[in-house]
Image 1 (tube, rainbow, N blue to C red):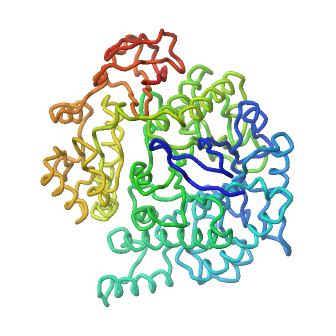
Image 2: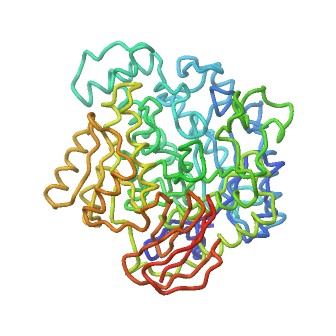
Length: 587
């Protein structure tokens, strides 16, 4: 099976053996609880299937792992868990497209045999992302697994791969401290000499790590190189015949450089990586009434010809405790639905089926209007096992597929760019309020009523011509950030720069600046508005009327959630319930 990423009318699709498919997929951690049959009945054909070299924890703080079997933990490889899941899907859906989601994490025997290549975590030692031995031996195991997959009876249904690793499979350093170790220090000193000509780099301790900004830069750059290394190995092994994607680059959400995620600029144009993934944001504890935005610079990803394939792990009224989904396997106290004071945690879903539909619809509206793909992540399984939810999923798939031939010319686009400055994170004093400036700005923009795109400052020269205003989110910009500001001045593009003196702007302040700069506002009442790619999404923050204004007249066709007639207008009002989500098509 041959696959690639292809753009049509500016939207990315997955081309599989000549056919063009909207990037919509499903996966679950607990295969025994997964809702494959419901998604198959709803017309879904793309499925990510999880597989790991080891059953060691994917979360080194909680000790959680979803894997019952680590393929390479025994004396000989054990593929039964993975093969069994693929076979079950294909039995019910022979024309499914399978994407192995491979956790590149070394088995116990390797960790025990190579202590100098590891770092200490709360749940034991794990491979360092800097380790050349890890990359060498990990590549051998990766090729062994992929060779098995490509020679299996189901090989003709494999459409692509996703490569995972590090903490929570998201290529964060296992210790969340830059893979701190003596070997890491030696590599850091060599890197400092080669990159900056500095031969007296400071001796690092766990206490001073966060104060040595160059170490943060080093651990992000090297983590990105490790991600690309494995993608290159995979692409070579499969002769470049299928798409390969990675988790990486949470530069619009994570603020700590020691996690290693601020190196997207180094690999965003890599020929070995076809799609990047991240979850939609966990801002405001995933409460309704807010935009669950993108964790990375999605517009830059597409500018470099890549697909942004978003993990939408949307909780529902059916989401239950981890312990109830797989009883007796995990220690008490992890991933509970409520905290010690009875408050909801991020694991708790909405109270009702109706609000669950609204949450799913809101996540879809964000990605639909930003031309991103989605894989619905049913973590413990059973979150979407509901006839109403499955009916919604079928409609969502139909909308996405029908958009393939829909031109977006002359339709509304974001006029505002929000610039993310990866290197500027190094300038924030650890633990200071400046660390929260990026998230604060992005979240408030979500309630401004003004659509916006997320881009790297390094892409300013290639994208700025497409926007009428810019917002810079770094209080202490890097050289690249300063250059992007200077470009705005040269091009007479109005811009707003957060600063050390004023790192936080409110919703009204952001909206007022943009409106005064000539930017169109769809709604000024704090609702979440999505508008782009020929679609309009509205998520209400209160009961009552929501007034929408558009830059000109369009035909407005209700698609999901709105029981109103088709209109042709530039202004309309819709009566909505609190936290309701509706989606329209614009033409």
